[in-house]
Amino acid sequence: MPTRSRRRVVAGLAVLVAMLTIITVVVLVWPPLGGPEKADAILSLNGPNENLREAEAISLAKRGYAPLLLFSQGRSDYGCPVLHQVKVVCFAPNPGRTVGEAEWAGRYAKQHHLHSLLVVAGQTQAVRALLLVGRCFDGDIHVIGVDTPKRSLPYDIVYGWGSLGRALIIDRHC
Figure 1 (tube, rainbow, N blue to C red):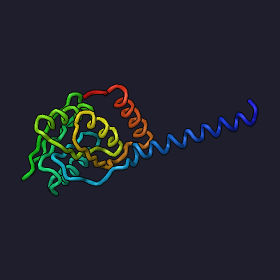
Figure 2: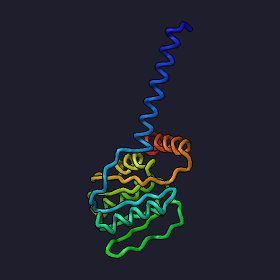
Figure 3: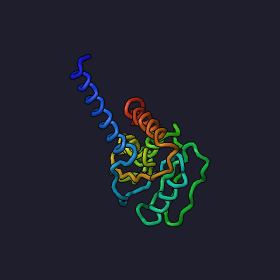
Figure 4: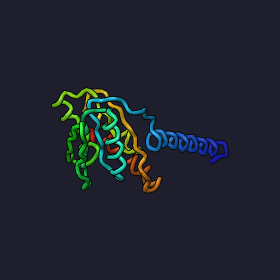
């Protein structure tokens, strides 16, 4: 391969790697999320380090961001939190993943005439949660990303891209 062609290939690959890195950082590592907004309900998604998500969802509820907490028990054995002055509805989605949580929340919201949700998700789950909940719920959605301790950054990135790919291609529910 001539030198000029080789340089173009290397430059093209460098641009591709840079673009993929930027997209990964924006979508999985530090997604562009706003602060909490008042809503009809707080939806707490399940996942690794559930205690951090639960603490954030409870804190938001106690601070008056919503009168209702929808708490996913997913695949965990965490009990249903008890709060005063905030109604708590615990549920076990089927399937026990983000797509099941989104489907359950969409059905619940429709049945109870909810118009807005404040979703508490893991940082690497936030964009996927917005996508999946948005397919199942027509109202306003605000996502709060909880920065959970990383298993390892490479693992989280591979898992995050795999899960996002699945949400885009396979989990096209609602």
